[in-house]
Amino acid sequence: MDSEFPFIADADFDVRLRNGSRKPYRHEDVAGTTASGPGIIKGQPAAIEEQTSLLGPERSEDSLADDEGSEDESGRAPVYWLLPPFMIYTLAFGAIIVPKLNLILALICRQYFADRRLQDPSFVVLPITFGEDNPQCQIPEVQALVSRFTLYGNLITGILSAIVSPRLGSLSDRYGRKKVIATSMLGMMIAEAITIVTATWADLFSVNWLLLGFLFDGIFGSFTAVMAITHSYATDCTTPANRNVVFGYFHGCLFTGIALGPIIGGYIVRITGQILSIFYLALGAHLLSATFLLLVIPESLSRERQRSARERHRIEEESSRALPGQTWVGTLKSANILAPLDILYPTGEGSSRALRLNLILLSAVDSIMFGVAMGSVTVVVIYSELMFGWGNLETSIFLSTVNICRVLNLLIVLPLVTLIIRGRRPDRSSMTRRSGMDILDINIIRIAVLFDLLGYLGYSVVRTGTLFTLSGAIASIGGMGSPTLQSALTKHVPHDRTGQLLGATGLLHALARVVAPTVFNLIYSLTVGKFTQTVFVCLASTFGVALVCSWFIKPHTQFLENDDLVVGLATDEM
Image (tube, rainbow, N blue to C red; front, side):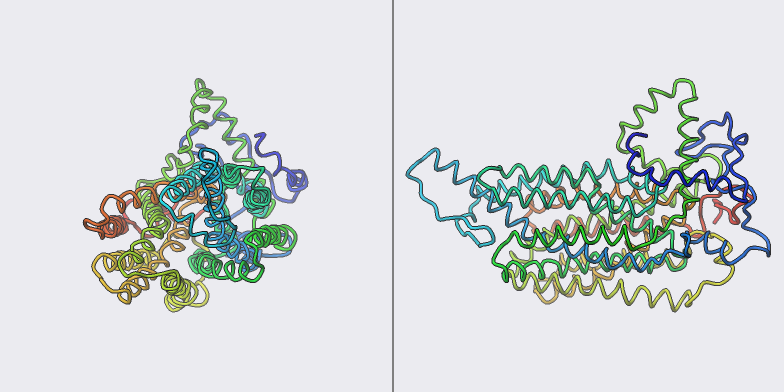
């Protein structure tokens, strides 16, 4: 519980809430209960007051809104207010990708030649300037050191964010989304500050100090935690029918930042003549995003829901400690970084075989799509430059084209399809009944995976740059899959477990961020010059596995809370 101390500022509201008109929890209903599943206690009320009802004609529009998306004191939290700070965050994230890599290259190159001069005082080398091309650094020895350094940095960030992301997601259920998102942004700010200090006083600080920046970025969850908890915020504020569209907007912001950020960063460095200028601006952008988030945007989770989640968490901890022989088991479980994945395999009351199968399949397909997206970028760029003789200009045009197509699909095609099929507003039955994901969600997922499969098959067979770009545009249609998958996952669990669930997917994303680039780059390095397209055949095969998995996902399957609280069954027959 010590790790929760920074988030307990609002806990004093509990007393006032308990003195309200509705009755508090019936603690006698949960006394002496035993854990019947991961985070589910048999006999426990569903974290809602006993007089709350989801049935009957007397139900008000306000209660409907509260079920589908939390309200703060002034009304429903406006989810679209979160888009501006998130866009600023992603632009800053994208803007430093190339400059940071070049800065690492220059720092390692300086250290390498400094070591050479110590060994051979007569050795002469041209001055190495930050932000310049420095052709003397384009040698295999330096490239190998840079590759190894970035691998270490990605491993540090990926492993730590895999450990932290689920815990941050769970904390956001209990103490609100805003504070946790801002906390994750703090890690990026510390990382940029360390980069600035290391580069400014390069003679005093070794390049290895940059690893400390990767460390802080990982400790605070990195962008995987920001993305997961942002989705949790969107889940609080949207109806299930429109959730995939809103998630698509956030994914559109992400890919816009990745597409436009490097261009903006390049122009800023060129105009200022200083590579560090982009890091100062990125630091300021992250600070602006966090400040806007904390001071302007309302919290998406009502204090009542935060209290309910804290109460449920307290009861679960007390129940776990009360069970004989559970102390050392709990210790081992807390040390297991994969323990948060238990939420993907719920047991006990309210769960079903179909629910567990859906959660496993959806998370597997989601991890495959994220892993390929993260792991194939470097391979695609290197392959295109090798096969078609592309330079920086041609490669930039290719990446911009593919990302623009992806953003257009997320911001135009996905909302349009959803609007045509579901209509502008969900019908009354969809608002009064949580029915899980529907067949439209499943079909969008299948189509997205299919287009990714076709795109990577195209990469493996085409032999011209134009057709290669066309294959990338086809694969970009698959970008609609990730927001739909994340949206579908949230429809399988109660509202007070959304952060916990998306935190678990953040863990999977962080692991994929480490494993996928390593595996795909290894395959490419072993097959280049023999059958160079092997890596794309493997990638297409991976999507083939995801496509097969998607055909076993069943619609209208969800976690069942108490019969008198939720309408709808998670049945195995559907």
